[in-house]
Image (cartoon, rainbow, N blue to C red):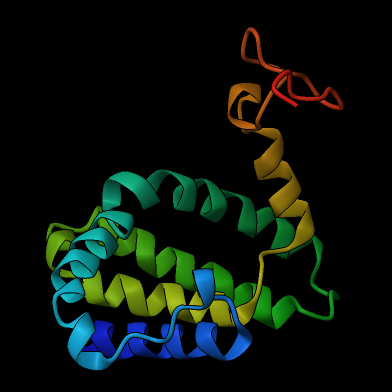
Length: 153
């Protein structure tokens, strides 16, 4: 029911801003009933330990040093809260009942989103650790590197 309400709000917002493809009208709640199981399945996969745990653990590992070195930062309290949220999610994934805690993980991720992005220093450090092959070029044979045009264009 919660996912159906969320989807209804998303479609209503998209329709209000004209973001639906081809001028489609917002689907009615009755039309979305069949979508709920599909969306629940997709959401459970996106919130799974297999997808989230490693990057969140890496993020968590970067927070303590940043917090220690930036106690005077204007958003210090926000970033400390983010660190605690990421810690809470990692604790769930490290526990034995993580498979039954999808709702809690979803709620914590919403809390994290409301606080905004992590500190730029942490985001930059994490992006430097992404292999070139995953950055969209430069590391994959036959793919254009940084600043090169795609050969299809």
